Image 1 (tube, rainbow, N blue to C red):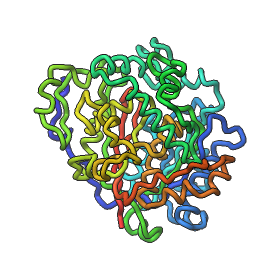
Image 2: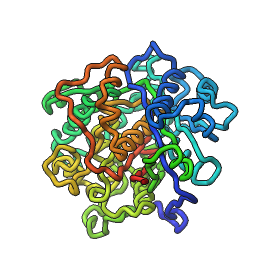
Image 3: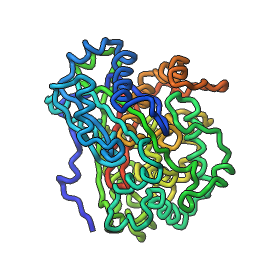
Image 4: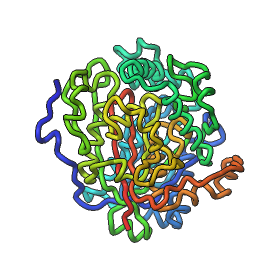
Length: 459
């Protein structure tokens, strides 16, 4: 049984205030043969600098004193030290840099590292640039590469596919918690639907629940629309200290809370332990649950630990009431519903209520204080999973929402035209009214690494 010591549960603190000042993306595609990886990364950082800060790139480079690069796997692009190549091509040498790799949470961890760079005083302006090149291998080979991030001694025997790794806990989750199968499908329907209003999305769709449930099964019971997409593309954010932030922009977004958790790579090695309670939870809530194994096969200790740190650091006691929007790592519908419970949107076993209540939807009739719109970006299911870029993409979307700039970067025809897309005739704004706080959850594997990042309006 895992037990925590006082030092394990220390609440993170930043030595000085840290802000995000700009963000940029490419669009995301299954195949992107017309652009090299370095071109995609250049496009993402130029968008942050030119469209976000209104600066000339040459002038911006004079501000930079460290760079964080984010790529999940060298295998895809067949290039070791890919970050070094990217760093060179973007013209950041001889400034120092670091490449981050923590599986699916690579992008979130890269942002976390940039925050620590600035908070420590080592740097004052740190671009974070993440990408994945997933189109130079077949889908089968790509799935095998991704599946190599699980324990090859044991999990690989299940079929070299993360969909298989999540099909099993989905069966277990349905068996134990008895959600309606339609409830899980609603997650996919929501995220594909929101992706329709983003020029960056790879897999937008206007699905019915019946279409999702009757689609081909990838790994029982997960159907194709319930699974994330394999993507190629890049994302960037720029992290800065207070003096630099307010010099570069009059609307910086402040880092309010951060957290990072891990758990055993091999799922079967996860031992039973008492539930780590979040600020909005009590033991009484789990008087029946404590008779069952936790975290077991259908909970993620890493996500719970990351959220615990971030909530305590940010002073969050009720996430639904105190956050205005949320981006989760919805690699599969089942991982999303589990995450609702891990981060305290509902007690364990009751994640379905978050969807069925309408709280996850921007357009629901609930009052604003009762809602927490989730994955308005389209998430991994609807928009992208270029792994090294994913956590950065989430932060970018929250950043634009808090600055009331969602329309600027999604509704403008120039972005739709740039990517050869047609803006939907029924386009609607997904800007959250008066958004001031948001959280991003970046998740790896079957919960081996998770980061939580809470941002708030900083001006």
